[in-house]
Amino acid sequence: MLPSITRAAVSIIIKGSLKPGSLCGWRSYKLHSEKMDALEKYQDLTTKKLAGFIPVGRILPRSVIVGIGPSVQQRLITMQQWVQPRRVVPEVPGEFDRVYLHHVRKTAGTSLVRSFLALGGEDPRVVEQRIASSVLSRTQSGAFGFATGIGALRQGSYYFGWSHAPSHKLHLAPRTFQIALLRDPVERVLSYYRYLVAGDQPTQSGWTVQAPERNLAGSSFTEFLDRVPDQLLLNQLFMYSASYDVDEAVGNLLECQELVRSESFGEDVQRLSSVLGISLDVRKERVTAHVSVVAEPSELERLRERLDPEYKMIEKTLSSWPGIR
Image: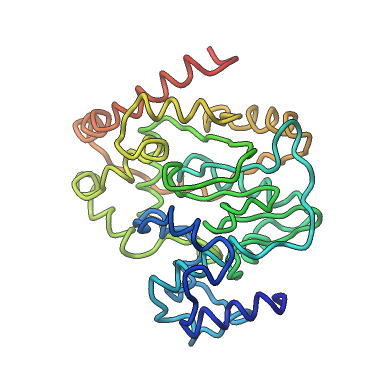
């Protein structure tokens, strides 16, 4: 059950009477608020709950959720930023207070997220669903606090957080240990295409790809290339640069404390466990290799040309990353 002050805040929000400045942090949030784009809507919990995609009956009746407008979305994010969890999360080694993963889709991000969510001793899917059904977009599992809501991530009261939000639209709290994920660009896009064709497993709960995005796959790989926007195709580059500037992206990547690559995932997760002083299982989640991709050499050449800036970004990042040759 939500604390009484939280329930009161929800009541204020639903009635639409919340005014700027009536919640702590509202003014600072307004300075940074930006319109959500299609990619953020894939995972932003507030947006998905307000659209009625996720049952939240334990917290707010579905009849209340459906039809709530953008202004209330912003206010719920503000509430996430405002509410303080009661429990203290475990310490992060060094000068850091929390861990955050920049989750680019189809880079083994879900596997790494669930490795963290398992730290409290529960099935990580159960923990994930609990976050998905929380207005505050956070939960506690054992001693570990987890968060993925935009407001909760800004506030910083969690052990591990993640989202698909581009780094240039996300305002993390100071002293956050940041993890970057990278994958061979062509392999990532082929995996993304397979994912759009196959969709999620029927048993998948929480975040699932929606029909409008699945329609990007079209009826062929050529049709997919015609439809898919750069923001999704060059998602690794866009994560670190709004203007797709390679040097800017490399600079932002190098500000992260750890780099995990899909090609060396098991080894990198073991190193990450050692650095953080925790035990992360090496998992393999949301694999769509069973779906074949029929792509002609000319289509793959076209794909490779569009992805050239991303290859340059990865090459420059790896050549500058300490310990990587």
